[in-house]
Length: 598
Image (cartoon, rainbow, N blue to C red; front, side):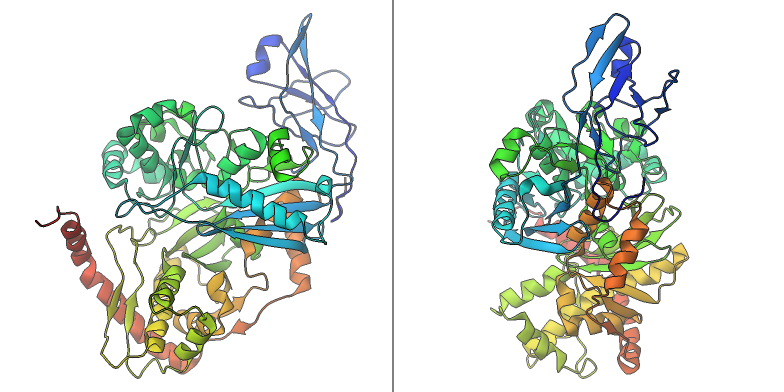
């Protein structure tokens, strides 16, 4: 079957036969419709295959790539020696739109795309983060649902928007790792503990003692308080009643998937930062779960990013004004979605997402474990993403602007642009909230080195930009250990709006910086996943080729030789400064944890 970008296809509802009755809990046997494979999920543990005379039987992963079939709320009916399960069908013939939801740290972005992945309407709704204690960061999940309702309302009221019945797929990415404990009905039992929260250091030490090198060897990732399992363990140790009542612990995007469908899930891109999975296999690992002192029963089933988890429930459809015929895929973490939207598919492709956090992602065709990088599954089959970053990189500049009462970022950029970086060198360490990969140091804080009383706000602003770029330079130095030597990086996110900031990235990193035409690539990446799930396209490569042919780059920034030479020396000082202050960060943390002086 050839899938056109418009993706209009009619599917009939096949019959799934389960033999014998007791195998309902483990297997389902699928009859294909003619020559076209139909892949589906049943909500049970696995999907198997059984040869039946006269029919073609197909084994299916819990996937679909949107061949239109979804098993939902099935009821087995015993008929002599076998059971019949009737399969609902999603008819994509008249459903030609994808709704992408980007659940970010400070706001939700919703974008409606047509079948050719051109944006039709956009909406953005802000929400807040609570900081109840030093190193803690939480969000009320009701804000997310309210933001989703508001954003969808804005989209549907746009004159260019289609009828809700024409929306084939909702695809959600989310900030990660975020922990949301929920009851059996999916109601949150506490506020979400978001990715920047560092409260679970003691739990990390317990997990380290129990698992040692097994954790890295199986998960490919470093044990860190930001990750999923230490936070889940913290809830168990400090809020045992919530842990006991929790039916599942969910990632942020999975929480919204459940609110939409009533189905529990986790997408495969989250496996690495769960610290509970065999990352190479993309499945839960009992050694890691037991060593972390957690219960497997409280973990949801894992799906490919493009798997259709369910259709929108009647309750959710009524609240949002959407159709119950719209499917919802498992989605992905925000960084992976953004990389896909930037066209990161090839071996060695480099992508920089400079938003609240500044993340560097490298795509490879083979998984490579390295202790300075996170590793996760790409949305694209057979691809891997290796990531490190500056956790408060972009937010640091925004914090400074707010501190001096400057709301006009363009004006501040211009004042930074006229500064000659060599006149009065100023080094900023951007690690204001601790740092995950590549430093793995929760005690770090921001440092300005070299200030004098005559310095202007433009000089300070430039130092914040340079500090973020120096942090990324550290990561590029480490990519050589992965055998990757990039000569170009694709830049997106809020920082990419600034021509000045983008040029500083090029000068400090010493590589060409391509500002991707779509500034917020996470919604586009999710739209690509949704279009693939709906069968609008046969593969991700064809989608990327189509988008590349459109162009839309906002410009290429080439390193200026004289500034790059200066920044080469500046980076050495940046690195020296961090290394010399590393023990002092630990002492500062210990000092701040002392009881208040009387």
